[in-house]
Image (tube, rainbow, N blue to C red; front, side, top):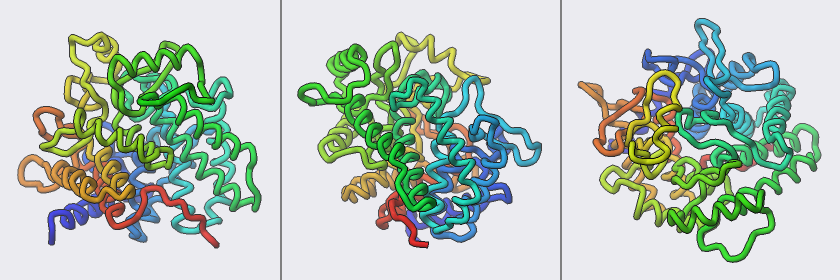
Length: 416
């Protein structure tokens, strides 16, 4: 058996180990709060499980979604995590986790597409609609983009906030899922939702990309902020999608997860995707490891953002240079990038990054062969964070399935 197949088998075994009566645990490791059902991790893991065609793992997706629904907050919020033993429910730390709600809607849609279960939509439509309404309220100004508080998504100890691209991309995909589920349930289009979806597409394409653009696009969110974004591009040579903007201006650091998701959700185009690929190859990716960092460049003590970064943590400071979100190399992001490359026909490059995921997830201390650690140190290339992490295994599974022709996000509408 090849190392790739061995790795895939190990990833599948880890997902089975994480699959409980309540759904997917974030990790089997008895560390911090990882032995819980997480909104974000559980749903992303669930998407990989759907790609696997394993019946028991697909049932695990349903159980994960049901656990999240049963613990939905009074305003419709999906939990950040649920402890299945104590019953403790968290909706976030210093701020709520917006992306838990977004991944939840995406996973609901993808589960329906995979199973054709209209009964699932019927049973939980009210809960789905509550999330939709809550997300609309989180636009605050009804202008089409979600406003994300500091620590409000997966980069929960990093410094970006405001109109964060990563979350807008998930918002777009969640609206695609909602629109298709609505069409199936009611036999007609939700025209308000369709209009919102079209508007969001233009807002993302026109406000987060500046490189080599001529003229001004039609859907500028805010004129002054837009000009600030142009200045950032000139200063920092941003040949990629901008990570966020806020009332204070644009951020400029390369957001690995966001730049990968753009194409996966169908909002890229060949020229922009090629520009991102080239920038990553020249400036971002460690050619020895072939892994994608969460953010680039690293924030160091000499940078002006260091003081803010040091204040942004929950219990202990994790974001030392080349660690965690601050330049750590993430198998899950790399797996998604390999999947994106594969679906764009760049099979050679996809294989190279898939092998990077294999190397990373194989790292383990002692005699254990497959560690599936959270991330790899960006300079020392050692495994860091929590081991036996389900979404690290999910990254491997999604890359392998994409190389076999399966997109991460299915677009098919079931006939049943």
